[in-house]
Image (cartoon, rainbow, N blue to C red):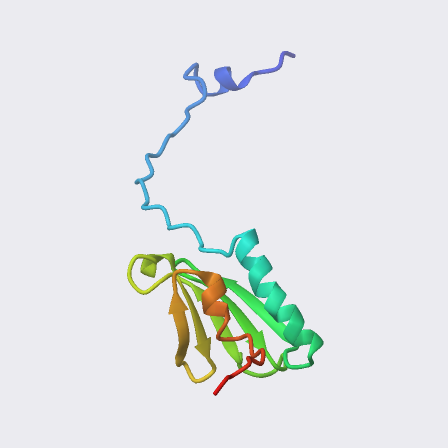
Length: 128
């Protein structure tokens, strides 16, 4: 008895391969994220506030149009502050903003270090 291969079984037609043409889908924009230098600046302030006992937790969200670093007093609460990076606004108001828990924008600008000063509650000498 001899073995019958696939080609003989199909009547000599061989294997049939069906190729389907898939429509070209519009690719999704890449998620926006904080780079290493930006995270260093944010985590520097965050570390000082944690050491002072003011902040306890954070979360980072990477969305298609913006990246958000949320700061919490307790993990079960709403964020006290959100540091938002929106490159779409870079030419207008600035890509960075600090948003309070109420939704009010505390500071917005092109330079992250200047925007983060809204969170840095260091005492300053006032002369009269």
